[in-house]
Amino acid sequence: MTRYLEPAKEIEVFGEYDVVIVGGGPAGLAAAIASGRNQANTLLIERFGYLGGTATASLMININGFRNQVEPDSVQTIKGIAQEIILELHRLNGLGKSPYEQKEYEIEQGELSYSYCVDPEKFKFEHFQEILEQNPQLKEAGAYLAETPPLLGIRQTRFIEGEYRLTAEDAIEGRRFDKVIAISSCPIIHYYGYRRYLEHEGYDIPYCCLVPKLVDNLLIAGRCISSEQQPYESHRSMAPIMAIGQAAGTAAALCAKGKVKPRDLDVSLLQQRLIEQGAELRR
Ligand SMILES: Cc1cc2nc3c(=O)[nH]c(=O)nc-3n(C[C@H](O)[C@H](O)[C@H](O)COP(=O)(O)OP(=O)(O)OC[C@H]3O[C@@H](n4cnc5c(N)ncnc54)[C@H](O)[C@@H]3O)c2cc1C
Image (cartoon, rainbow, N blue to C red):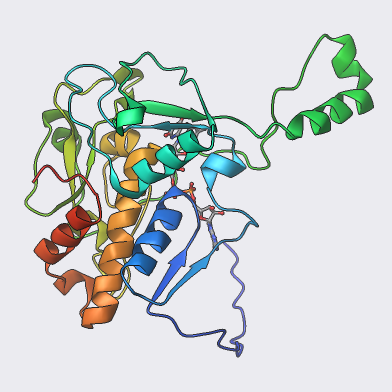
């Protein structure tokens, strides 16, 4: 492959921060909130003019994975910032009905079901009508436009190799880890071609999946954590992704404040802080 070497250039330093979060998807926004709440001077960098990542840009409006979709589903495995967002959307009357079969839990009591659907913004309706007016062939074909996302959603991209790589067995057997920082109870959405429901209340995601093997002062948040493909098909759902983001942001703030490298962080301190701030770790 022909390669081109870009010349080095000087770049003005924009600012100095304790924690810099790159990407404002579900993981990044939870990470930024968590980092800020933990007293770190935080910068969130997002290439688009809005937050939400795939959820907003690709109109993935179902936030899945607050607990198992089928029994055993008595444990709500995701709380914290992800839960706060759903409760706030509920308060603002911004939730629709989830299309998934699921047992409904009492949101008024703060108990979340497996999945929630966010109502698309109603003002877009007018815009779609306009598109139809300008494309009479669509109208003639009887087509109607429900939504158009500005970004094509790609389900799976790269994983960063961390100190531990989550395995298919971890997910299927519901493995528990001492260093748990989040739990996923979502089905494995494509398990060799079918939707495999978990037969347990969720598997743990340990902190070491967020710590890159080779790079210091960096934490991985979101869908790129160190994992095999099958568990990824579960924890890539937005609720667990936000829990992972909350853990990464909290860890980053603790590292910055305590002047320790992420791989040297006392995970029990992180767990204690996450629990204090509403996360579910089953401890
Ligand atoms: C087709 C499809 C359907 C899905 N359906 C569902 C569903 O129904 N329910 C569900 O819960 N989950 C669903 N998911 C999964 C879920 O949407 C993703 O796994 C989740 O959004 C991952 O969150 P993230 O924050 O890790 O990454 P992303 O959502 O990809 O966010 C990454 C963010 O980083 C930004 N970014 C990237 N590069 C840069 C850069 N260089 N500088 C600055 N910013 C940058 C991006 O703009 C983006 O905002 C679906 C995914 C896809 C693709």
